[in-house]
Length: 180
Image 1 (cartoon, rainbow, N blue to C red):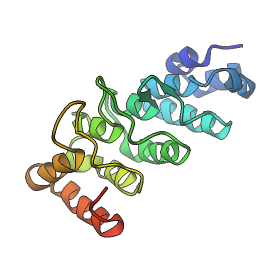
Image 2 (cartoon, rainbow, N blue to C red):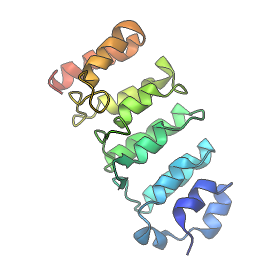
Image 3 (cartoon, helix red, strand yellow):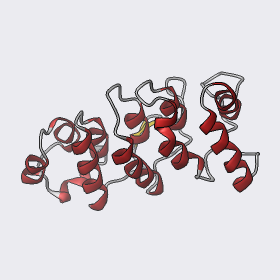
């Protein structure tokens, strides 16, 4: 049996992954997706994550108050939005909590907005993924203990630094109402 969390993080090719991977190992290793999301190679990160999800990996898995979305958006290396956005959407559809936050970590959406490797309009596909979710709670504090809400932060960014984000927030309000 391979310890999937470390194996999926450090594997260097998809063929190597397939040669040693046994889907039966997922049943006892719910943290497998955490390793896959941490792989430095974007193509491998996406391919392995998608395969694990195909085989029943638990997208809702959390370690304390951190989930796979935090792992994805806390990455300091370059992102490939075209590859990663469909994967992020699938993770959310399969149960990754978009509202999870703690003293240490903001929500995945806020973490994505703070990531310098996802500047402004480049991140638009991720805006859509989050803002299209009715369960996204924009009334949460932008950071633990802050008085400003995520909504207030989005409104500020939309007015000053990310106009497309402001436009997408208004579309969300039309669709779901302004309460969330």
